[in-house]
Length: 382
Image 1 (cartoon, rainbow, N blue to C red):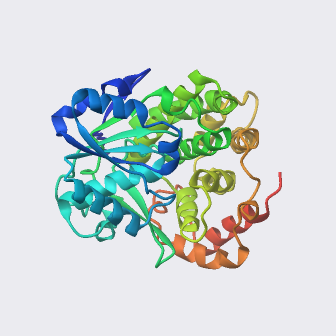
Image 2: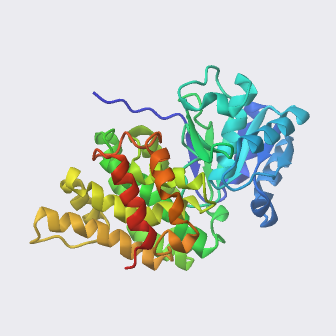
Image 3: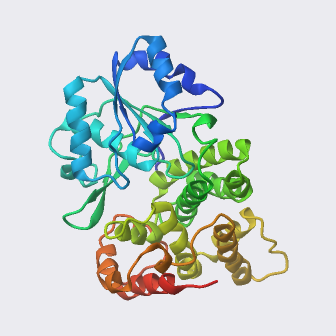
């Protein structure tokens, strides 16, 4: 038996943001825009503001979201929401603003702190309407019913997951990513690949998620390199691929890459997409024996030729394809290069045992396995 559900309306294409104000009238007349200073300074809010103004919707901008938002950051955003008595929320940016927007929507109707809802399905009341506008090609947060928040007191990133948290609408407008810096395009694109790949081999995978995930893997193999090079159509296709990857990662679950990367993010301020990309090939090697057929599918989707090879040889090409893609889009070679220190590896491995993304991993694993994966990724040289 398997279940598949999805609760977000996706609106994609050129200039779709021109209609966000008209569409939002059904949710109220006062909007909170949750974003960060980079998004605002680069003018990405302008089409949204124009559309809201044309529709007669009053809006208030909270641009204090930090990378890897904390419980306190969510509370600050919620206080701003209360101060201006908003009816609904528009999250604009990468995963941090979108997760913050969803978190505020939870607290606004359920009370307390977002930390009160850590785990699965603890949100009791329907949340406020949230409209999401992604400005990267990786997180998929615009369509997920989850949020990832940092708790500095525990050096821990926790997940709040609830089917009540699906954003109401997601707007995929190519203008939002056409000027995305190449390194960020590469890092977030590899994040999307990790979502699709882990979902494809997850214990929770089903025929619906499989069909979407393998298609997304193929899209990313085709479009990420030209997207990093600046091709506008490729960037839009990556925006779509990232969104689809977000849908399947919620439905199927993830695995050890996210378990290790999220735990590491609680201790070190490394970009989540970069952390995923560095860890991904090493976790793939570890997981390969659990489902070599699916790894062969991944190799083919990424353009590798497998004719005449054994299943094991074909499956190993999936790892090599991911390594080549990471190299081409500028991902660092190892964890040392992004500031991780090896003295924290034992503690991070221990913390990863309780990560919410660990159970769906296709191969059973132990504390020793987790520590070994961190260590091989720490000094790896291609």
